[in-house]
Length: 236
Image (cartoon, rainbow, N blue to C red; front, side, top):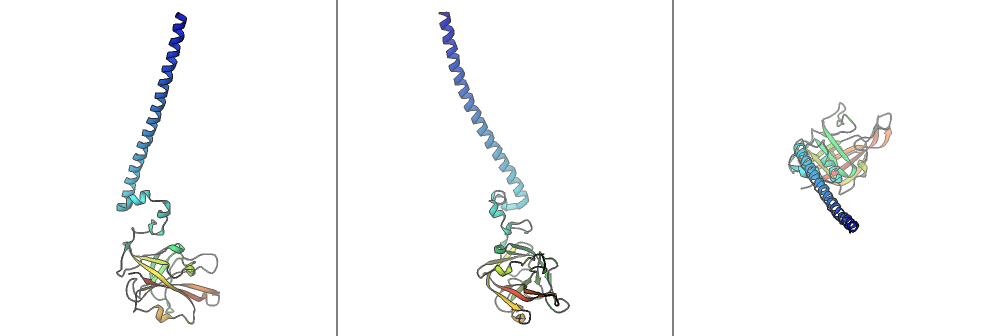
């Protein structure tokens, strides 16, 4: 009898041990799940706090937006803030052309010694002709930029010729106010027949005119023999 008792007790302990092990296993799983949840909530809170500090009222978007949105040129660090739609004239500080990846600082220029429009000081910037209309005012706001240095250095307007009717162009001031233009045409002119008067007009509908070099490099003139001009109409 004593031997049977020992066998029965051992069997019962095995059942109890197995039952306890099962409960312990599920308890461990539950603890792990709760722990992960707490860590994620804590991380989200920390991320949100950092985002609010860095980005202000758009913290939720900037903290959790997908990478494709954050890679949009309108959300780069150099932008003063999230663009604010505007229809009033502004002093341009930044030019964005999403379709060709342009996101450039805007310099202000007047005329060079030979009377022609000044150009930006670097290949990555563009230049606004400050003696003409501002973006948003009647007439043409003219902005130029380099295509390249005739060798290997690419300019900000390297791909300007790829623009087509319907593409969007955005111009922002230092406060983030933004005007949006729609391309209506792209033209190439020889240096001798470029319509200067119509390009630099100060009357008529509000347009943005972008200019860069085109054609062949003429060594004797240290210039290309054509000009590429993009005409874009203000969206209202």
